[in-house]
Image 1 (cartoon, rainbow, N blue to C red):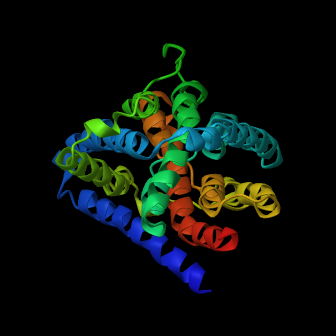
Image 2 (tube, rainbow, N blue to C red):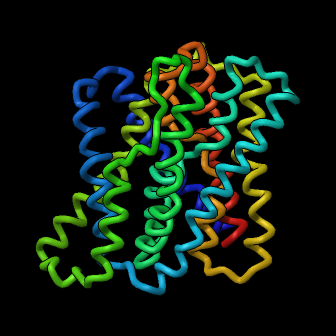
Length: 312
């Protein structure tokens, strides 16, 4: 029980930062700062964190242990597609909402939520190792959501077919892996390493703050918890972890990797789905997506804490 409460406290702390971001942007205190802050977080701080972790902690042993993680990501995405396709027929989801429904099960917040969560629940070297595992899983999600996800959600034939969109964090992962094998850690003088670490770790908490800002357009009276929303909650937060859990308990896997795998199986849908829908998709589905985001993120405070408790 003590482990569960510790996990719950760590999870609540992370989500409180999101709540603060929601409030600050909701009352328009920091609206003018949204674009500069999101640019700094996604394009500067997080890539620097990735480079720092990989250059200072990555080695051949960790590389070998991480090789299967992109395949794990593919498995989760493909399983989400299969489950989503089955559910749209069972629930008679309207045609104009079907792809949004399926995408909400396929694409998760596999990177920006686990990074601060693991920084909160782990200590010492385990923080870096867990975050490196996240980087490898997020490679697949980054490539797929900005290609497959966009093509699923777009409504206009005038929108050209999207291919893989390579983001700064993606480039940082590839560059960091290459640099780690050339022993470039010695180039990071003590004072430079400290500065890089501070900049990188600032992005970990800022990303949750900005996630709250991204959800600040939600009007609570527009939140509707219907069968499709409940189905996504159950699929994303319960069914996926239950699929993975037996294997994690059966096979001997180190505790850090075990927690990473179960959390990645049980995280809520990606907030980027809202951004993609606003830019390319059917705006009539925005309220549905926001209902999914609010409910899954609130409930995941408890489900993620319980999952961490179970596999520890």
